[in-house]
Image (tube, rainbow, N blue to C red):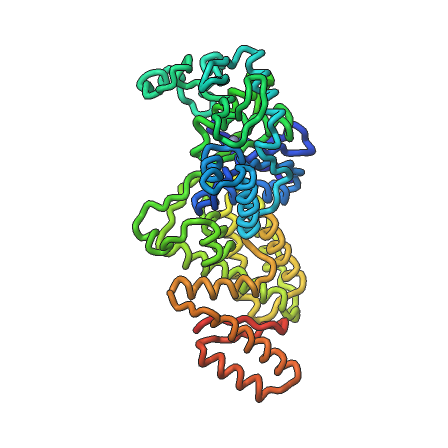
Length: 486
Ligand SMILES: [Zn+2]
């Protein structure tokens, strides 16, 4: 098992990940609110959570990964009201859409994906524990009862965000809720309004939970009182994660989480970006227009703790790199193993896998690992011109398999990946013609059949027709063919 270091925001330093239970990493990542299709900006946290999950697994850790769905929320209630359907129906519909997006982004399923609506007994129990331990109080609100967390009671408040409670008291007098004893106090349970349509019985009457309590309750339910690693976007660090700590530690009387990792934002600020992305804003629209592989590649192109600036050429650059990787994979599997062994090349490629693992073990440094991987591809492209030794090919396949599992940036079915890249290129250049690909695919099938029956006259004729359509066909060593626009 390779040791992984993670930048822990509790201590603001890189630390070796030491699971409490040596056989299992208990990992929680805050999931999306399912009121609508997710925005491309939401995808970064999802893909980074998946990267942690994959890398830890590939390094030999047994990971229990919990990612929640927030299916109880003001926006969900409002959207359902507008549609005239039950909020659960609306939330469940977008959970399904979100799972489709995640699959398209090449994400592995989490071990558990709990929802708020199914976790209500645990949420209510935790609020009761907080009241019992003196960290929460009840007030009258909207004809019912509201439960608030008493922030000044939790002496460690601010230990993650490094925000001083005193600084919050001053200047934050925009608070209009007269029920709060301190402006930082936050809602654990709110009473149901008459027309809300989805509420739960509780010791405080009908109502529903505040946002923060759900993660504390679901983490405890599925992972126990103390977990190893918690992840989310940097926007969740304060107050959400600070409040999760306050809730869990005050309710359970022990540390909540040993390591906190946060990914930086994806910035769409510049005008140039909007030009290249047009009005493609949801993950669904992006993946339908370009592909999930392209979005994943862009999202992992910089270290998760660095800001990611979407630029005019983000998509073009990703297409070029994905093509280089999958051209390599196609050739690797069709390689003729004829040349004698070259010990120096073999040693070099063996050390490349060690170095790739070391980069990923170093706070999930994907750009570092990709740099080495592209070096391997460059070497291969040079060496393969004179043929390659079987052991050398074997080592390369090991690297490809590791990159596939640990990063999800190498995909199965490389021919299909290249085909999607061609479509993406056409969208990018605005030359996509509806149905055009169907004719090309049909001609390629006919050409393959012609070649199989050694009808070379016909296969040449088809090649000429493809040429007229602006298509170049490449025959691969394994008998398959790939194509691209000239
Ligand atoms: Zn959360």
